[in-house]
Length: 331
Image 1 (cartoon, helix red, strand yellow):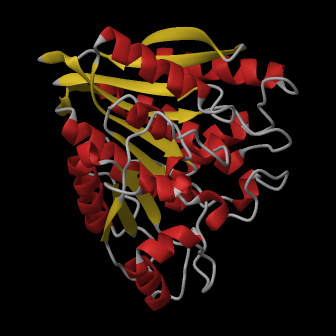
Image 2 (cartoon, rainbow, N blue to C red):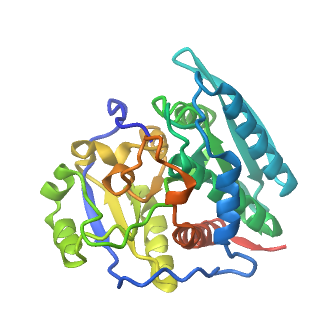
Image 3 (tube, helix red, strand yellow):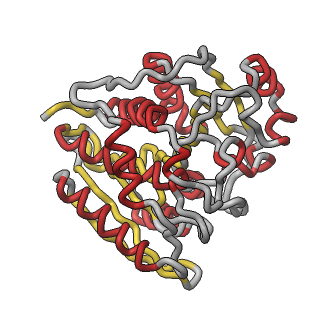
């Protein structure tokens, strides 16, 4: 997750807020559909296989190895796999797309993705091996399902370089007239803190929306929730994630960007913003990065700091929503 995002291509937006309030219990890790159950141990194993700096200039070999791992997992899970090299601003990258064509509406596409590169100098366990681990396990667990609409699981490159991979993908989709229903970006899903005072928010966000400040204050500013941030076109997805969280006991905060999001630039800090810029619905799923995780973009972003029960609960909820929205069913 880079610290800033270019805003010129985005419409003037603002925010409306929906908050789901829960107690402080550990999220229940359970699947919502037959065969859909994310294992904390499996997610930990996935993160372990790729943790380590994955930056385009200083660790190109590890980045290449990670690409191969992603391709292998996608193929072994039985998905159609496409490797998409690209160049943006003179920098080369590679997106990896796993696709399952819709049985009824193949022209309608749902995307769930995560970036696999890291910032320089960090092993990137939370940012963003956690998100990629979720995508890889989703490929395995969803392999037994068919879908009404087309589903793509994507590993984006160069997110730490101005969202290069997602920007290229969203732009190419717009030029081709692809009917993307929603693009969900998993941006750091493995860090949870339950102690009081462990959660912060962007100052501008609290200024514009004091409801968030009051809600957090009531809960003693605990960093034990997952945030889902989307535009108005993704309202249905946000509502479904909210409902999935309630069913599983996962604390969820959903934020719908409507009128002044440019005033809160932190809401644009992931690959979903590339799809917003092209007029597509998009959602970021995040543990709020540096507003909770003190290891953000540091050498201390290691696997030992992650909470895989939390990550599994997040993936159960979000993947359940993907399954519902894309019309998934067991084969």
